[in-house]
Image (cartoon, one colour):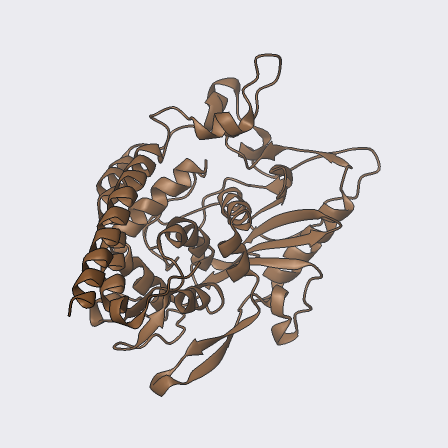
Length: 394
């Protein structure tokens, strides 16, 4: 989605649009932060009372039929293989183990912020936008004083894993702490209860963790959104440089690009890789074959060097496609409240998902966003109308 304006109203439109975005999102952080500070709820649907699901057990969980292919032996501390269409988890190892996510956390950042920022908005970067970037961060090359389209910044996030681009986008939507609070609320709304957000770009921070299960939830949800799916599947793009020029950037997901000697995976459609010295290598990978899409997450392989995360994801994807119909699910990426009930009194899934209880994670924040979005749209329309009248009368 892009927004374009005629020259005589472009400045007013851009200013008013940014005012609307800021107004829309600055009312949300207080509620989101308050919710983020509460103790995490237990497993969805009261699973704790009925006993832990297989996904909460340690070790590898799989329910094979006779003759099913064996699960590959991989060294990652935690991993998940799931069907992106149904949400069924086909196999997992320590799925809910809380580990540092590195830049795979940018998937949650995108799920949270993408809907608020149309790609055609242009923004001149100020010094405050780039403050607080961690030492040694991956950067795409955002320069203070230069104007960028939001879509360029998203390319910088998805392809180059640019923490500088994340900082600018976060500054446009309420600031760093407010963005972290909204990400926390978004994670809870998606049923991702292992994730604790401290730094929206995935930079190592005390207490910041996620899990292979939660990352699979984020990857699956992202693929359901066209803008996210489009960005995460890009192999390369041009990024604005100084003096009106541009330079090429390439996706750092080597399973997608085939860079550095890693063979590209057939049918790969994203999603995001990450690395820090604390987290090790992490990866969310999705591939489509014969009308079926799998999402695989791999966290911190213990053997095989820096490219092991790609090779272990490759072997898990191969197994997932080969095991189609040969295993029973060991869990689901779909929150319990969103699953259709069985029997004659069943509530349709769409209704169940659209009308959650008022105290469920994320919904008060959603109500605030929708209310202020309407107000912001009215303010923008009025401002543009007044500017047009003023210009016509001059």
